[in-house]
Every structure is written in C-alpha cells, then in structure tokens.
Image (tube, rainbow, N blue to C red; front, side):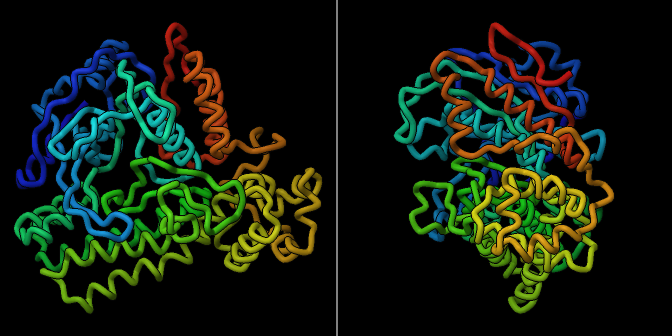
Length: 489
C-alpha cells in the first residue's frame, strides 16, 4: 500500500490536528475487504485486531498523518450562511494512493470524537446511523451513483442520547473512503476570510489531486479557477442525474455537504422514493421541502453558484455566469442518459428524450412503485412481456401510462444491459424504503440479530451484479459476534 499525507501541503489554516476519542469498547462490525485488497492493505489488515487498531483506535499509518486532521469549512445551511462549521465529529485520518488509478483517496471518519468544531455536541455516531450509511453507500454504488465507500464500522460501547431515536442507543465510529473531503464550504471559508493565497492553493490542490491536472501549479490562477468550476459543474450534473434516476433523496444539500470532486457522501436523513413524488422530502426538519426530490437539481445548481462566488477574485463575473451555465446545459442530456441506464435502454436512441419525459409523467400519474417500474421495464422492448404479464401489468396498460408504454415497447435494449440476468427474473426488485430500513434495524436493536442486514446486503450485491455498474469491488464483510461470515466469497 502507498500511503500519502498530501493534505498537509495545503496551508495549515485549512485544518487542525486532533486526537480521536478513547472508546470504552471496540468491536468490529463491518470491514470492506474488497477495497482493502484493491488498495493492497492485506498485510496491514490481517485480522480483526488490525482493523480495530487502525479504524477504532486510529493508530497512525507510516507515511501519512502523525495525527488526524479536522478540516475547516463554512457553508450555507438551508440557505443561511454559517461560519461556525468544520469537522465536528470526524476527521481526515489518512490518505492513500489507489494503485489501479493512481488517484489520491481519503480515509475520513464519522463519530470519532469531539474536535474544536463540535459546538457542544458529543462528536459521536449512533450504530443505527452507521448502518444507514452502509446501506446507502452500497445501494447507491449498485445503482451507478458515484459515492463514497463505507470502509469500516466499529461499535464503541457507549450509550448515546438522541432526540430523534429511542435512547440511550448504541454507538459506533465509521470510516469512509472517498475521493477527497474538500467541500464547497472549504472555499467559502477562505473567501469569507479574504485569504486569497490559501484559496489559490486550494484550487490548485483540487485540480492536481482530484482531477489529475498535471500542470495545475503552472496554470495562471484565472485559468485554474475557470477549469475547476467547469469540471465541478460537469460532475455535479452527472451526480444529481444519477440521484434522480436512482430515486434517491439526499436530504441535506447544504454547501458543506457537497464534495468538489463530485462524489456523493455524508448520509444522514436520506430516503428512496416509494413512488414518483417531486415533493418527497427526506429530512423531517426540512420544513419548507427545500431539498425534496424534485428540487435536487435546483439545489445542486444553487450550491455550484456559491462555489462560483468564491472565484470572483480571479475571474470576471460574466465569465463565471457562463461557466455555471454548463451545468444547466448538461443537465437534461445527463438525466436522459442516467434514466436510460436505469432502464437498460440505449440512450442514443432518437426517441430517448421523449421516452424519459413520458415515463416520468406516467410514474407520477399512476403512482406505480418507482423501483418496481424501473425493474419491470428493464431492457425496454426486451422487458415488454414481463411488464405486461406482471400483476402491475394493468397499470402499464392504463390510459395514464399509454404514451410511455408505446415508447418503452419500442425502446432498444442497451448493448451492455442484461435483462436475462437472474435478478430480473424475480417478481419484485430490491429496494430500501424507510420501512425496510427500520425493519433491518429493529432486530439489531432488540436482540443483536444482524441477519436482515446480511440479507439486504446480499440482495443489493445481486442487483449490482445484474446492473454491472459497480464503482466498488465486490462487497466487504459484515461481522457480528459470534458469527463472522462473508456476505460473498
């Protein structure tokens, strides 16, 4: 394995060294053996004790950080600017080079203890919150979303009080693997402080390390700022399109929750749509539905504009306006492509755009299950027989579905789609609606029974194999004493 400490090349005002919490217990719950193997960490992570030493006690890696780093950032939260942010219950633990791609990857934590940015909170994570993030990352990865990976979960033996779930509740610390933890809020903090030197350094750092721009240090700063904004706009268009095609609602699209590498991360009150409802809102505290399903493209564009604000010292406003327009120009074709991928339909088909529009309208009009319709019609024309013969067939042959039915029945199957895969021969698809998530957690809380979580992950991995989009390697291993068995060989 090749560790790194690249983040320390940035000005020290962008982070502060912190110490992890000393947990009363450390019990390994989940280990992502697939990514550990890909990153050539097998010799360092030979057994459960090694995983706990690294991801429960956070013993420093050679050639990475001597101490974890809490990152500094500000952000807009539900539209209001908040300068009192930063890593309050997490830190950047280590960095590593992906031997397959040469890209820099971060190990970041959630629930690792208090930092100077904790703002009176306990710096901890509930075990249920860790389980929810594991499910979110695995499901999104299987559905083709560029997402952080859950790398390790350690139960920590503390009883936490939370107002939004029965308390006291079990605690955990989670380590995520991500293509960077630099947020829009990291840039906002620097423009707020009028620290142009650090802002310039951060622009070049992101270009070099997360967009592989070899000559980032030599580029004139105006060119570098323009390049970064344009690249982020492109990735954001693809990111939000993949969320929409997955029927996913992130829940909290504040600017401190947008990673400028364009990778989905930081899963709190997320939900998946039960049926097409543009107003479906994930967070109970989002009283105005600012971040509901249908407003996610708008919220993402608004966040992109806040990043553009940070480039004003280097680039003319008129030019910045043209650059953020790239997101708007890309959004519709990206949505068509993402939806066609979910449906296993050739996105280059001349009627693809018309089909997607009709399909989305039909979902809204009929209120057929979102995942069920995507499952039934997978392959387009190749799925016609299954869609007609299913118990939901009467919905598809109704007046409200007529236009979509006509187009879907003609839609060419994508050359990489696998409608004959055994997964698509089931009666119903895998889904992760809130009732299922709660059902998975209930036996863990009651009797420490992890069997439903094991089963859910196995079904997600079967679905992933069927779609064939996985950004991840095969699944990790879920551990629950006294049984320690791999989800997959």
